[in-house]
Image (cartoon, rainbow, N blue to C red):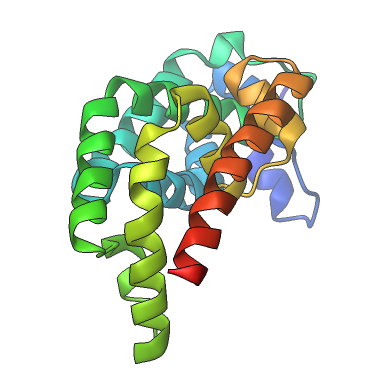
Amino acid sequence: MNRASPRASQSDDVVVDDSAIIDWSRRDPAAFAEIFHRHAGEIGRYITRRVGPGIAEDLVAETFLVAFRRREAFDGSRPDARPWLYGIATNIIRRHRREELKALKVLARTGVDPVLESFTDQVDGRIAAAAASQALAPVLARLDAGQRDVLLLTAWADLTLDQVAEVLGIPPGTARSRLNRARTKIRAVLKETDHG
């Protein structure tokens, strides 16, 4: 049976979900490039926010290499590969935890967030953002890894709690409680900053 590739189907205005593309890539490995094209930008932004631009490109490449190698294990009942990719990326980031914590300590000392700095247009905004970032960085560094992962996956990757739970392999209730604990700590710091 000669089936059209998922990419060819897209040209006919038919949206092919990620699971179909991954399934196709098991027969035609080049088809996996479509998963990269769809999600590399979003995964790259998340990784960059977590570890900084210095090694982000390498970690994005590693994320998609691991995904490609593990595509046989992808759960085909899930149409969206993003939670799976975020899970791989988060595990890779965990292996680079020291660099992440070092970057947060630099942010705490200097108040400069190189990922956000270029997007800030007004001087007042820069001063407020720097003050908040400088105050928050040590709190982020002190959060336990589970709380930090849940907080950053919801804040920077814009995932739902159900998606975060899937990424981290934890129950949704655990994700919710970790997020609540992290937010409580962050609110306390923001309150101090506003009154300081």
